[in-house]
Length: 213
Length: 155
Image 1 (spheres, rainbow over the protein chains, first blue to last red):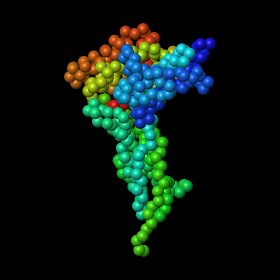
Image 2: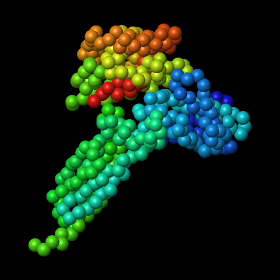
Image 3: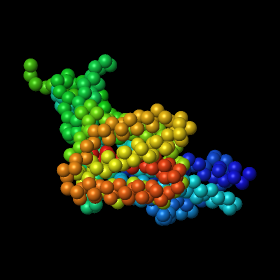
Image 4: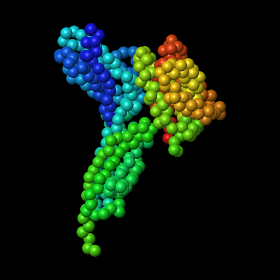
């Protein structure tokens, strides 16, 4: 009976990582005992000791930011949560082995879409991550993933799209009709790791043509 | 297309690293969950960090041969139980292909091959210090560490 109750205290202990922001998350059953507090430990795979995460000891929320503690891209980590109910029942669960290079998902890029008369320019801004190199330089996604590239689409009408792609910052779709609305969609791809971001979408209208004809 | 591994002087074309990842991903969580020794890592920093290009050909050759002849060979029945043989075959065939293409030359200085071999022995010694079942499970579960390292030589 106790085993059954303690499993209610704590479920689905796992990392959720997006652009190298590594958040430990967990759950408990809806009707679990109120007043439960949670404490988080973490360790580097291959090291003997578990370390208590300051700021996530005896908390009532069900998440803990471990970005700084799990930021080394060549390391692998475990985290574990211990739940203690007001009645003294406790449960401890550990994550699977975690490595941010493998597990992080990629957020949509930050893009500026600039309408002109007969073209639309798209400027992709570098994406900073919370990862730093040995010299304290904050790394961008582009610096972490050597073969990262962008795929850009411009929807002309229901059946026709234009495509551009590459790893440079600036792109231009030209030969467009003035004073017309277009839908742009830009994704980030990292082929080596089979990663693809959700699209950044911009709806933009080309400028009216004011030249005398 | 057009991707290759370049381990120093050794070049291997025709292997897609994402396919290796795909094969391992289907087995990873199941196998790693069976490795309860979280305080031991076989492919530690001393084995894989700061490996020179010249060393990388020797080290990759030694490691992949060990995985083929010891880890995959002896863990095969376990993977069969878990019904993941197709993934193991895909991984093993790719490793076999890579090893067949790696020709660590003997022209390099003795120190390069010695240095690579010392790294490999660190790994092998750690493997032998564990009970065989635990060692096989841990080594198999560390294929992601191996692939992450190999990814540095993938263009």
